[in-house]
Length: 247
Image (tube, rainbow, N blue to C red; front, side):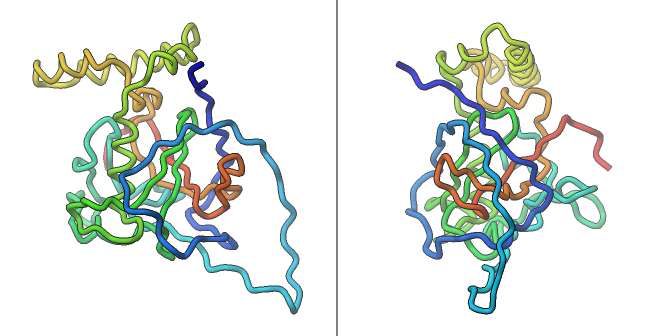
């Protein structure tokens, strides 16, 4: 029996940092990014910890690299249409926009450095596990880099949706939204050969973002994902929005 598509329940994430997380100090295996089907976790709430003189000090904050962060009132420093390759992303600079330098792609995605992290998104029923990419052109590292995050998100969104996954949304308003995103995506390809090729491939996971296809940065999910045994500090929310004119 095929696995059912279930939407990840993502709590509100007002910050791009997290303190008090329990983190693995050693990096994960050097393997390509893995896509993990995510069951719906049960929400739970925890009381604030009380520290006594004998209590251990809180762990250092986990901070996402500024170029990946969701910044309140700003959104993101990156301009990236998620239907396009990650090489098309541009960085906001003082006098406009710039392509991403290899030095930036090779920087750690988080401080402290993590061997893996997981990305979830509202309305997107898959979690994306990001691991160090051993063949990275931006200089491979034993920890997750900025380039690893961008490439893993791109690869995850480009995966084709299975018939069983499409069946889960059939007959719903969400199906119409996904179908409209698919049609817009292939119809806007200029090259006729590539356009027909993309049409034949059908719906992809990026189409589940519907009209909200612009990258707006990552913010921490304070509760983690208990259903996947992922502690706070290693789970990040992908914020997205509909396209707007660049300033």
